[in-house]
Length: 213
Image (cartoon, rainbow, N blue to C red; front, side, top):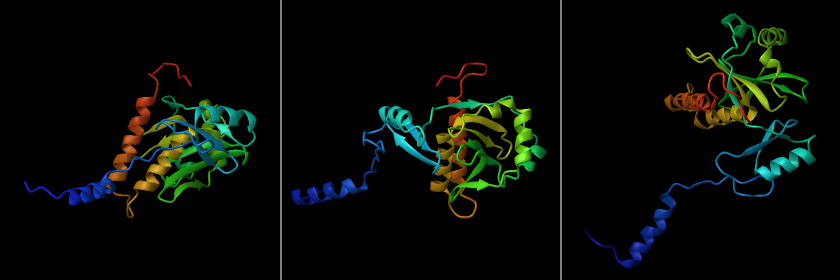
């Protein structure tokens, strides 16, 4: 094998560093501390804005600026007892079979959003239909305002309903926005969506087990 002169070796070494995948480290948006891949979030309900934060900032800001920020406790629970018939779902007037619902304190009502290539898009929710659905499924009335949601996956044959922290919903929104290609989204984005829900199932406590924050 032909060896390169020392100057050329250094040149190729310098170029190689630009071809290596760069690891983007997330940092606390308040103090700048480096964050682990799984980290806490604060929600600013008035702006529907999620902020990445370290544990210390999460506690301090939620306590001292509680009117502005809400700490998002991590939760993923599959609601096996929730039943939504096709006619009930159609009555909600959600344009696709993938959506999340949560009670917004600034709006003083339940909002319905669905992920799209443009981000989280609000649907015009049929209020009476939602109230009837919540009456038939009382657990939907127990969602913590702003920070917990009902995440619905009725794509294809799936009929999955999760009580989950709002950051998981926006994680799905971000995934779709980043991976969508063309008109149909492309094969990869649908595989990523399937993997996302597989991950949610894996986070759920055993059936009948207790959920812990």
